[in-house]
Structure formats: structure tokens, C-alpha cells
Amino acid sequence: MKLKILIAEDNQLIQQLFEDGLPSTVFEKSFVKDGKEALKAYLEWKPDIIILDYMLPVMNGLKVLQEIRKTYNDSSTVIIMSTFMDTTEYKKRCAVLGIQAFLPKPFRIRDLINLIIEHYRSNDEEIAIMLEERLRRKN
Image: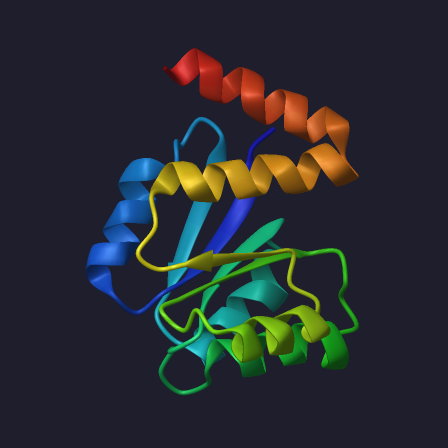
């Protein structure tokens, strides 16, 4: 079993960081470059995890988050906000809308993997163990 991870990021260098850093043995990755594409991919692909940049073209990450949580009433998809906007006010707005984690840019891919493992350790120990075992085998 692989976790399906949707990465909504318009910066190609950061996309490449995700592509190179997230092992394909653990994650099935899909990339989109704007908020509308993110919503479309969310509805069609049903990812387990969404990495959502705030400064997306067409529709920003906060609006995408709001649509997923309120319009589609989805509280189970893991959403991690990733942005340079590392302010208390912004973090509060994201928390109110129901993110599982906040990943401030710049970041190391290990930071993201740790956030994902921590989330599953608290919510689905079986998946956390599977992730840790597969990631250990990769190294």
C-alpha cells in the first residue's frame, strides 16, 4: 500500500524537492500548479494527504482548504499547509479550518516526513508503523 499524496505547488524547484525527496516506494505522488487543479485532483483522485501551498494561482491554498473542509465536509483527508507566511495569525486561520500540520518554507523533506509520521502515530498507528518500516528500508 502506498499513500496517495497530492502536492499543490506552483514553484518548480519546490515541486522537484518533493519529487526527489518523497520516496516512490512509500508515496504515490501527483502534482498540480493552481488551486482549481488542486480541487479537481482532490475530487477525482481522492488523495490520503494534500500538501497545500498558500500562494497558488487562480485560487489560494486557504480557499482550497476551506472548500475541502466546508463545501465537501471532509475532515479526514490529511492537509499540510506549506508556505513562507509563517505568522501566528495565518497559522490560526489554517488551524480553524482544520489542517493537520503546518510546514513553513524553507523546509527539509525530512521535516515533512516527520510531520506525516507524527500525524499517523496519533491517528492510525498501523500506517505510522508501515511508513517507518518502508522509510527505514529505503535508507
